[in-house]
Image (cartoon, rainbow, N blue to C red; front, side):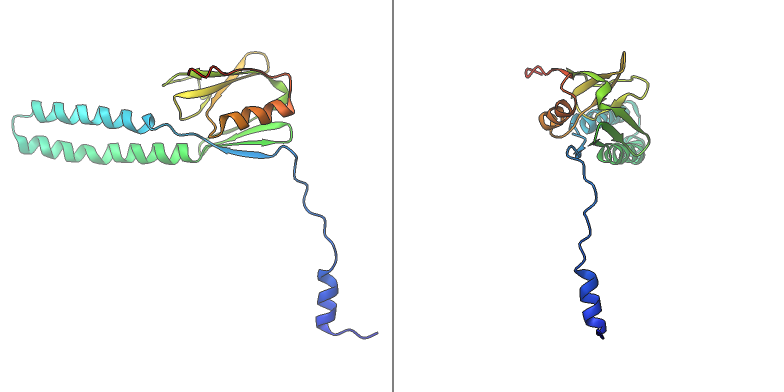
Length: 176
């Protein structure tokens, strides 16, 4: 039997190729960015500029210094926007992966002991803060290790983690 090229190509494409394995619990969450991340540097910058305008003897020098301060504060705000806009939380199989532009980490969901909703503005916990929001989730895993996250859809995030590991203790005070 002699087949034309068109018939041969049609037969090749009729073959069924199984789809790639997609986990039942694969979810991707973006970081919730609080507007306070931008307003605090702007308020500090405005206070600095008003102080400079009051202290300088010549108004032209004051305006010059204020204009020079626009560049560093603008760069800082763009860096904040870029950094927090790239934070992603991925729940895949039995693992929570946190991906940022500077660092990434992975936590086994079965090691998560507790999730607590907290209200803290500035946190410096040795690189454990992967959140850009005033209200965050503190995830305690292993024995006493913890990280802070702030997913866009907090309820769906916690429900997905709880579906994988039902032993997770969740305390989410809604008053926060």
